[in-house]
Amino acid sequence: MLFLKGATAGAEPLGDDPMILSAYTVDTTPVGFTPCWWPATSLGAATTVAKSLSERLGEDERYPNPFWVIDADNAPVCKFYRGKKYAPSESV
Image 1: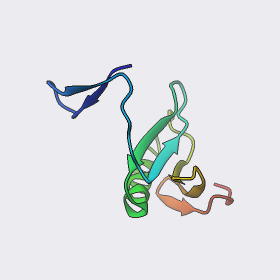
Image 2: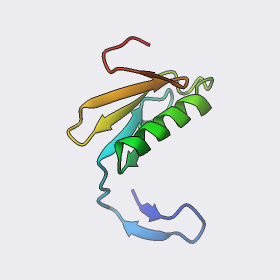
Image 3: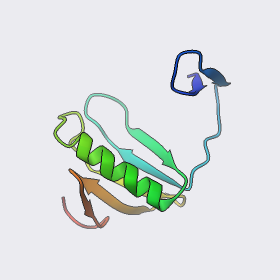
């Protein structure tokens, strides 16, 4: 798998095995393709991304599961479903 730096045409190749550093990630398990994750450098950024994605993709049948905010120790912090925030142990 080749990773690219930048989201536009002409992006620079990073190589086959880049290291992505992040304090938090936003994870979800979509239907029909591999799990998705987005890196974030702070809890605030991760929370904003999770909330935004859950609002924008809430009606999309490919994303029926919550968007989880996960910390650097791989522990769940919270989850968002259709724009609403839940504790990790709370049912959606």
